[in-house]
Image 1 (tube, helix red, strand yellow):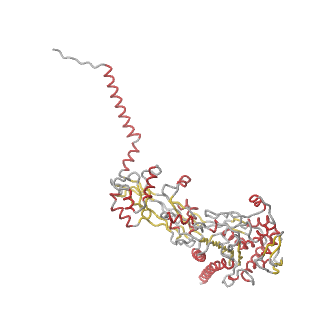
Image 2 (cartoon, one colour):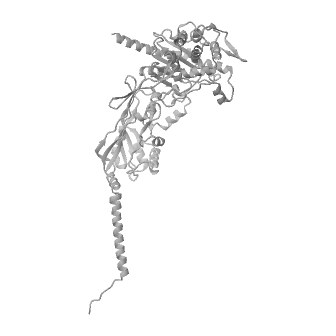
Image 3 (cartoon, helix red, strand yellow):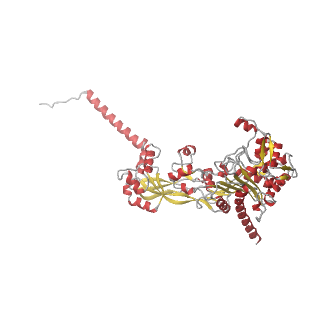
Length: 595
């Protein structure tokens, strides 16, 4: 029998050929997709299974006082972090993980919720515990098999060696917020940023450049060895104008009170002292502040986070009489010999405006020294509110000084136009009288009143207050030296400033002066007390401004204590402690130069 042939239908053969070619093309396309198009990405993913690129946080720049004493620095600390790509609860329950690390369950839950919401890159470590102690670190290493994706990293941690000292000037740091990440490209997720004070104002300069470290990990994600390290670059060093010794004296004198102290170098605008009370410890924030402590800080009735030197404004009381005297002399409404008889007050319109006592006949110098309200009612009425407000603005009131700190307010420098706009009312003679003695609608910050003292000390030239003396690179090279900048200048005859200075000297060295407590200091001081009313039945705010030495001013200061009583009784003793310390150091330096 002949061999039988089986014929395959043409259609079926073509179909098989088509399927073979199609599968081949799909296979080639898939290979191209995996090896060419996705090759680099998949290779990185494969490498990431054994290699990790760990960010090395850059140390923030140091902050120093004017003599080089360290006010803010860094110290190494251990941070326990979670790697989203490797974390798993297969080896342990969340409760057990939290128990081993020593953190509340909410911390882990918050981290996992952020990861689930795709707000954290898979290979970006998420902090669970900052500043872990040695016992915790050891426990994590020993039980790493129960903690898949949990690693111990070394990071710099901010430290403030003097605790609460100068806290409002230095500020504090905290975790970067999403809003900050949107605004600034130099910040990375889980960086630290400044939240208050110099830490915030100079955050860009203090931030360094983060580095990278490539490490090899085992199957559990535990580090095996370091392969490569790109060192982080620290931020710039800030040398401040602060005098740490005087700052200590001021803060000690303010302890238990609610107020502020500001001391400036009138010839440069350098801030020698800026103290605010009550205060806080910036070290509370360096590892993440505890929720209960944060609630206490923000709900405290005395607002310890508020820098009262620049962020609170009150009526300056009789310290403003210095401004009224300058204005009257400039506009020719008074001379040193102009006299007024004070019988305990003055009738203005239908109202009697009292003086704090009957002074008899006084001239301008006596009126400043004895703080006669009646005398300054007459000067204010002779000037008018517009001229008085104008001179006040030239002496630094009614606007922000531009100091290099966040949170400064401008206060209120009223005039008839301002009152019509604010209260829809006309301006009365009584408003002018109140303003002339530092009451009424007027409000100023302690920093602004320190500028008033500077204006008299410096014969009309007011320098912008600043806190940074120079900036240095991490290697110590000077990047910038901050030069004095004129903020305001009043072109007035030298006699104007001399007459006002004599009145401020009379407050200390003449019979009836309101600041006689300073008369025994070894340096000559010119000053003016003030007690401002603010609420019926409450104690007055105590004020005092001064400069010294009177003939060659090197320091100008303002003290303000809220609801404490009279300036001569409360603020002057604080000034005395600061000026005693300043005088003692000046004498010590003078003796050293003579040797």
